[in-house]
Image (cartoon, rainbow, N blue to C red):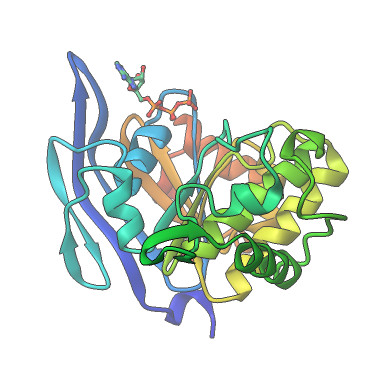
Length: 264
Ligand SMILES: Nc1ncnc2c1ncn2[C@@H]1O[C@H](COP(=O)(O)OP(=O)(O)OP(=O)(O)O)[C@@H](O)[C@H]1O
């Protein structure tokens, strides 16, 4: 199925967020289709983080609406968004460095089993968590020698892999990745791009915030361009050049002047 024929699964309409006299989001619209990688790009201050925070429940907009599978949703916290199968990996990763990979994968969502004192006293089922962690990491082809390794002993790319694996283990619909390759070298960045493709190929939709235009062009099915708190265009990276995309992003080019096929 091509990305143009896919159903829209997550939508936002007219989202507005003001911080005092600063309008971070100025009636922004957003559409994510099933099984696509949608990149969100924009200059500093364009409102990318604010948009992602609204979509992931980390920020409650002043106005506007969000629809998941056509149903209105109101997220008051990231926990609400997670309940609907939307998981976010922030740039600072929030992995627990001293804990093992398996423990990190299930952090805050540990698998429990009945303890010796009967069904009323639950204990953490380490064996099951380890088995599921191994399976999940293998499914995503993340090569790690031991799941019992502390995360602080991993490379940057491997840590990013653990954070992505954790989000995809629990996401039913959407994975939001905030600058997942920003701190990585070329090889590790490519490894993470490959991982993102695998996540998409498993049927999840991915929102990717990135400043790295070559990465965006390599991996995105469509690109949402954010400017001054609004969505100014959604473009098809197969039918637009990187320089025209940047020109729209910075305001040097009017999106209406793009050829028809550049719009997605
Ligand atoms: N908590 C806040 N308090 C006040 N102003 C804020 C706050 N968060 C964001 N802003 C302002 O809102 C606008 C949009 O910020 P946002 O962080 O969403 O943009 P961005 O596109 O993610 O930028 P960057 O690429 O620099 O991270 C900016 O002008 C920013 O200064």
